Image (cartoon, rainbow, N blue to C red; front, side, top):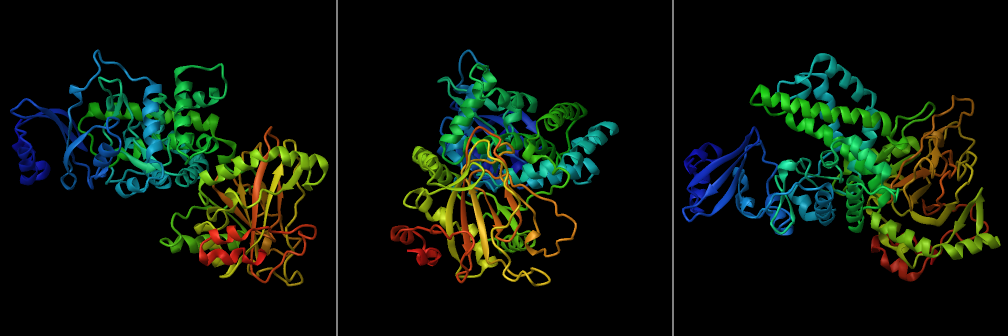
Length: 597
């Protein structure tokens, strides 16, 4: 095939571009509705790979150049590109292949892939090349496809299924929609990195040196890690089994070893904790299945044979998704139990650039008296505070044993960490998202009224229902007064049902009628870096700690500058802070703590 046959892929400029590279012959290798791949040859005997991306909008864009520059060897070398034409010229990997060829192991795949994801975690350059992918929108698209035959979705896999199977899967997705919604929120609020999402054997190559090379990034997305894992573990049940065996030292199979290696690489990046990954990876893997379904929708499949192959693959993955959701939906992601409701939560990526989200968050807090903000403080900063807490724990234990640490409940104690270390950083005391929200609900000039650390030891009982402060005007017919004091809770560990969190009755802060029907309660499920806010008048209680680990949380109470907590700090100072900590804050936020110096 000559270069002239590429005229329909990019016009005269594309053909001329290839000819200027001395390419005069193209041998077809692979064709799909979204891309065509050729081996290109020059008169001198050199060979390259030419890829023509025909997908509308060409999501590949500048990503191949970024990967070639930042991950040499691990990704194919890009020789030249015309991204606006969807035209890419790569090295020919057949010239750099292990002899004899070997099938890549799951350990080799995830070691290479994990290193790449760790490198690109929270990378601003990647964010410029690849817009963040929304798990919530993926779920919406999948639910839309299972319900109707859209004319703009000729590749709707659900439409290829027998009607009874399609109806069954529709019922399954509807039944688990609340859990999937909460999974989507968790994914969209976890630090993002590069995800391949099509990590099958055809896109993996072992170089002569033994190095793994990851190819074909056309389906790549920027999101929480985990979207590609179903392919590596032969489906979600395989991933579930690997997670179940991961903490058992006697389990040394390849799948478990691969998962351990993957987690080690991601946690070493400093952007993820073990707890965060244990929560988000299975959720992202579930959405990797849904993404495959939604990705196929815009394309008309070329033959009945292709349709059947795609359908069989999708059905296997969807069957695995159903079995996983039936058996393994984490308790904190399950639909709320009777008498419970979902804890209100938001994720605001840029408070300056997204004022509408900020206003909605403020309204949600005013209505409920409680709100969780995902990814509010860098997880690495929370990890540093926890390390300081653990280092000082022997001294805290001695204080507890001597009776000099304030007891605030059954096996609950208030300990002081000090603000000279990680706790005094601006990212903790004045995170931008939190400050922007508090500006709206407390007004300009609010202060940090108190800063405490509360530790609930293993075996602690639940607290009684209470509010931290009385209403300003309890004799009023209703309590619809603005917030004047807000507790911001920053857990130092992920809060699971066994470890416990804070149970809240949303709306109780503005409810004066004691005879009204009881309100449902809600329990947040934060990961390190998330925080939840509670109006000081909202009814709440700390839950029992049924685990074998202690539960440390930070409580930062922000309040209007004229308010003083006369109920809770009669025996100790609410805030101890140094001048150096004040100076480390942004100038426009130093008033938060200046009063306490």
